Length: 390
Image (cartoon, rainbow, N blue to C red; front, top):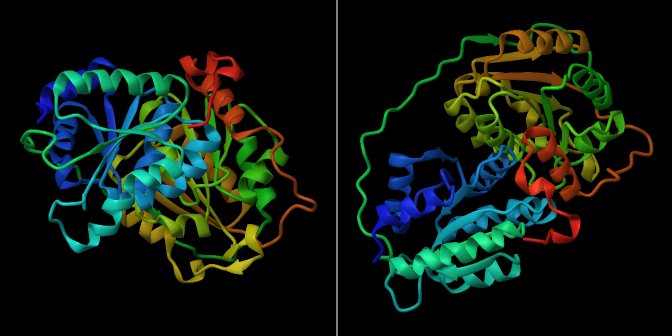
């Protein structure tokens, strides 16, 4: 059994000071240590934790993700379509509930058999974490070598690996909405690229723009490709969690998250997480066309969803319905001056740009370019030939 505090101190020595995850009884002591001694961001689900940690990595941190193996299934999308194409290296700890021969709940039986196979299929390097501290120290150094090659590395943690670490008394913050503006007029219903043009025109040398999966990223690329931008190519629903991780680690940058209704509906719990951690330098813009536009225009259920009220109830400082491009521009201008976690909602039409292409730059090149823009990140100086898939 590992002394949890000594193991946690080893992680800190290696620079791992930010953790995000969802609790598991097998990992509770390591999670308690992270809450007591480091920065811990409690995610609504495991996929969001991966996205938060990825954003934190872009902000210059060395993050750790923590999850139960049942939650590994929830993280498959960002592990395969965010970490892999963008070549973002994360250190992870996943518990082994349902291990063969150890009594456990029936819902863990299958997952216990396939956890390591799943990691293999996703091309994530992994090892069983040793219960011996000296051996575990060596394993951490091996993991560090993989991370330095832009490869993610996960430790699979068996029952009883960590000794008891008590959770210190937690201070719970309460954040209340300050400004809520509901819809009260006729919607202009501009095209997506028109809204993106307005948003893009408001950026300055301190702005990072994060565009969600599908046509939002593709059209932003057509409006203007910039080293300020990240175009999400997968991981649907993860853009605001990614933005949260980046905003919390790069507080001197303005983080503009551009979301879609289908995307936000997929991981709406992220609104509660952002509302709790309250990055004042983040604005979350929802362009709602009531459609999965990239896959044929099938309707979403957004017409039945009051996103402005939901964001306000989750603790966004400002939650505002904007009816037109003029109001969008005015709200962005005001936010630049006043800041505060803000949610803007704009209804847009279902139309898209004609003959819309795709970004002519690879996702990992977008990552490296943005890293240089954000913080002279060490990994951004690597030669392309040194970069490997996770």
